[in-house]
Length: 87
Image (cartoon, rainbow, N blue to C red):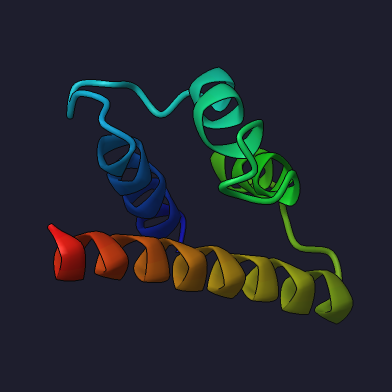
């Protein structure tokens, strides 16, 4: 799941016109994708959780994490499909 999220975020940075060498740091995700409202603010919390490999303590938290990942992947797919159709 973590790798898929990282790949989606990196793809979105490239979609925004940044170099493929652009690092997917929390700061770059925030300034280039969250602040312009391309992704929800919860993306940063999700990213932090995945990168720190925090343990999932209960079923509710697991469902929330999966839902956030699903939402992010859906949003990234929609954005990238629009580019593919128009580009």
